[in-house]
Amino acid sequence: MLIEIPQLLSAEEVTSVRDIIEGADWIDGRATAGELASRAKRNAQVPEDSPQARQAGDIILRALGRNALFNSAALPLRVLPPLFNRYDTGMFFDAHVDGAVRSSPGLGTRMRADLSSTLFLTAPDEYDGGELIIEDSYGVHAVKLAAGSMVLYPAGSLHRVREITRGARLSSFFWTQSMIKDEGLRTTLYDLDRGIVDLRKSVSSDAQGILMLTGVYHNLLRRWAEL
Ligand SMILES: O=C(O)CCC(=O)C(=O)O
Ligand SMILES: [Fe+2]
Image (cartoon, rainbow, N blue to C red; front, side, top):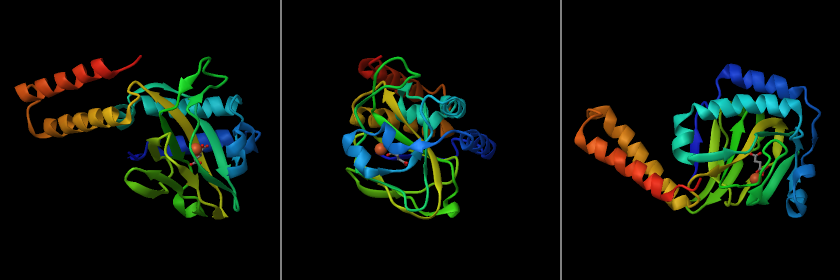
């Protein structure tokens, strides 16, 4: 399932992140790609251990921490420190699936990548092309979001970034290990949570039914979560 998280970052946070990463020493994105992906990949990246990546990444991690939609949909156990890429005109990233196990100098451990995220840092009118094309069990989706908005999608889905034909596209991308490995179970918990949130708008939150459904949510999470 694909989930759009509108305005994860405020306009001020987008400006701060852009200002920070513009001062970094950008490198060829192929440096961090495996053998197969490096043939598919034409972009530039901020080195993952650079101070700029950490500083801008912390702004994003704080925003994720306070975002109810991200927490409900991803049920995150760990988030790999955010990385940053730029596609100038003529650049692209061909179809690939993200690696299952990842590590980073900042994390100190390996983690399973369950969910991939792209956080858009440039407005759609700043560039042509550059859509993130994601194939999931429901079909093929072309995603191009406002600056500050993010898409969350299963790391195992085939995806690519279409060639940029004007301007440049800046984004942050990162991986999340979920407490719930199985996508179907995770989606069920997300649907249940959304249902409860919706009911609470019209039914008193101490109603017996809401208490029971909230109990069911937590008891399923207790059964399924791997920490
Ligand atoms: O730039 C993007 O939107 C996606 C990047 C990506 O797929 C990757 O680095 O694996
Ligand atoms: Fe990818």
